[in-house]
Length: 342
Image (cartoon, rainbow, N blue to C red; front, side):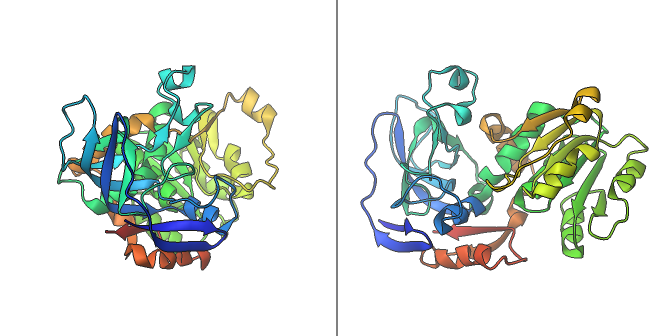
């Protein structure tokens, strides 16, 4: 089969490799589409040291079951699906709690040693298969994984009905947080950004207010006015930028919640006002999990309440995959999500 093989820093080549053999409780999927994640680019470019080459990356997968070895009877051949890519040991405390993504032995399809979706076929555990209907397009399925963690973190923490959510950033994660916060009943969705393009994007995806931190003389004051003096119930950091991360406690109300999703550089030392967090009872949450959100997300897409497909701005064939990585390399401002179509 044809696959895009990562061979080393900034080296991805299209090669012929064997079609995977499946074992017990495994399935072979014919890949229909795969999302191109910024994390994959950072790994392939050498900026992020996860796994090792050679490997086939790609953890955002929409496929079709062409071979399966299982005792289950609810997944027929030809079933279209997305893939819940986190794999745990299955028996530790974290896995029993449904948190295999933080299992001490956790791994993920699309990261070494598991080949991923930048290939014509991929092997997955049957337990990772999330069936989808014809109401979920291949485009939507290909990028569903990128919306799962934002959704799960809001499900876990909760959004007060009629409350306020502040989101820093309008990348794919920021946009997912905007859309899901709206579906969960937030009355005010405030987005922090730095330019007009970000503002247009924020309102398109459901923001009710936008604060330009580059031009505003008092961004915190603007948020206080928007929230009638209370600041935001939930604050989400989705950029990974050190100054933005450090500013999050300024925007959250007493007793509120901060979700940290963006990952800063290893060299960044983040400073947080611990005394403020303590005396104002502000809770800070990391967000990397995705177990519980897959099926609710599929249902929301199927019933038309969530449109993730609109985030797809670029499409490429597998042979053109390096053009997709070039979008990240060149910091293309038109990029939200790129996919590989098969």
